[in-house]
Length: 448
Image: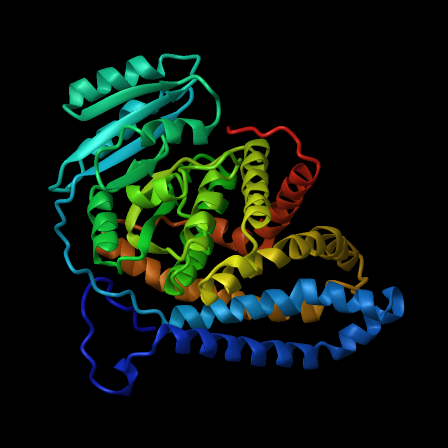
């Protein structure tokens, strides 16, 4: 598969190089996805009839739609969109715009100094100011980051926010930012040496109504255990594919707080970060609601630590799911002025349904299949695997190009990939369902 060269203008040498507008890509993707779903429905009719004899036709349609039809449609749309994607060229690869990096911390004395060291080693030629906000830490975070800043010669300001909550810490910093652009960075996230240069290049090269750009966040502790290895592929392929597709349609749905850049005027326009457990999700949707656009930059890479226990992973993913519901409650999909964003956010309306079906139908069906009972899971369900493998192959080739460009090496993690394809969703869907339940009953919010 030919891989597009990011940031390099393409020479049109025939029909294969012909420009395809975003609108045409959008409808081509939907057309292919519709054809795929019709084909899936036709070949699944015997399965549908058999299952309807057991649980009734309406329930059988809901179950198979949740297992196959809807996920197949979404994946087919993503596959075609990624095949048609061509990252627009940069206007500059050496921006010198002053930027502020904001790091919200809570009990991060063990990692903050290393994070600041990677900030210092950026190849960015512009001025970098750093604001670290100690959010009610009980350790020596403030002392450690102040000393590290002095030792590294950083232009660093340390603030203290006594009210717990990441949104409080970030809003505290907003009043002290003097630059036009602000980058948020998690305290345990390490920047590739060109990360700031690429993310500033993208926002400077984007249209005026692009107010934020999400960076590419990958896993740096994948050698700790098998759970981290699974997540390495999720960040490398799954999350990256979604963000690339959303960025193509000018509506990346999460400019994640772990590493993203924002126009400060846009932050002030929406009154900063909202009081939400998914503050970065709701913030991004508030941008989109105001007709602003959000991009994704795959070459702006940062590496973060992922949970290495099921308990911590469940907390994280349930928090993400809960943040999505918060955003849906605050900004309805049909309220977005950009039609592509209406579709992208509309997908989130069906995600709880898909997670519930997967958790309470597909997983019990898998157990039945182990005993030779193929009511729900059987040979027909394997039909979704080829599309998933094609999607992962496309992303792997693209990410391989990104890594070569950044002089990085893809770690060998074959076992992690096999388990990622086969069982990862069996972890994610129940964790997401728990997040939906937390939001439904308005349970206590936990930042970390």
